[in-house]
Amino acid sequence: MDIQIVEVSPRDGLQADPADVSTADKVTLIERLVHAGHTRIEVASFVSPKAVPKMADGDAVMDGIAHLRSGPAIFSALALNERGVERAIAAGVDEVTGVVVASETFSQRNQNATIAESIERWKRISGAARAAGLRTSVTIAAAFGCPFEGRVDPAAVVRIAAQLLATQPDELALADTIGVAVPTRVSHLFDEIGRQNVATSDRETPALRGHFHDTRNTALANIAAAIDHGVTIFDTSLGGVGGCPFAPRATGNVATEDVVYLVEEMGHNTGVDLHALIQATSWLEGVLGHSVPSLVARAGGFPVGQAAAD
Ligand code: MG
Image (cartoon, rainbow, N blue to C red; front, side, top):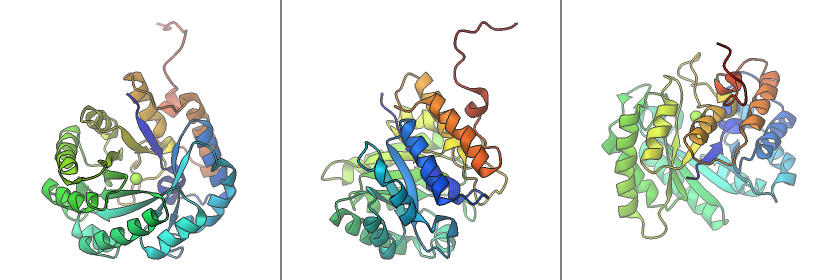
C-alpha cells in the first residue's frame, strides 16, 4: 500500500524548537526533504509575526524554494484567518491548512476563539483558498486529549468533524497534540469519523490523515493502528523536531525516519529514501545545535550484509 508522508519539520517542527533557524537554512532543509523524495511539505505559517516570530519569514521561504515549485512536491502553509490565507495565496502555496481545536479551553487559549468561532473562520479560510484553486486541509487538534480539560469526548470530535467535512476539504486530520492517544482509541475515533465522512460527503470523500506525537512513546503504535483502519496519510517531522509546548522536555512530533522505517518494513511504500533522511537529520542537528529524538537516525536502517557479532 502507498503511505503518504506529510513532512512538517520546516513549520510545525522548527516553530517549537528552541533554535532560531535562518531563512537560508529553512530553504536548505526543504531542498533536502525534496531530495529525499518528499512530495508533501508544510513549509510556512502565515500567522501574526508578533505571535510567532520564528515563522515571520514565510514569504522569503516561499521565494527561496521557487526553483522547487515546478517539481512534484506540494507545499502547504498554515493560515488561521483571512489575512493569513491572503498572504499564503500571494506567496504561491499549493495547499492551505487550518486548525480547529477539539476542546473549548484549549481553543480559547491557543486560537483565541471558541470552537464555533474557529469553525466559522475555517469556512472563510477554506472558501478563499478554494476560490484561488488551492488544496485545503484542516486538522482537529487535541482530538484525543487536552492539557486543560483532560480526556476529549470522541462524540464531540465527531460533531466537529461533521461540520468541517461539510466544507469539503481535500483532507481532514486528527491530531494527538499532547501525545496521549493509544491504538484502541485511535482505531475507534478514525472508524467513527470514517462513517461520518461517508455520510456527509456528496462529492469526493475527503481523505483522513493522522498527526501523532511521540510524547508518551505511542505514536508508532498509533500509526500502525490507523493504517489497519484505512488511514494512509501521516504528518511526521524530520528527526522528531518540534517538542510539545505543554511538556517542555518531552518529544512532540513523531520522527519521519522512524515512521518511514516502520511502514516500509511492514511492506508499504512511502517513496521517501531512509538513507537521505538520516543524512538530513544529521545536518539538521548541526543547524539546531542539539540532538533530536529520532531513534532510527541514531541506529540506522535495517543492517545490510553483516553477520551478527555474537
Ligand atoms: Mg505537531
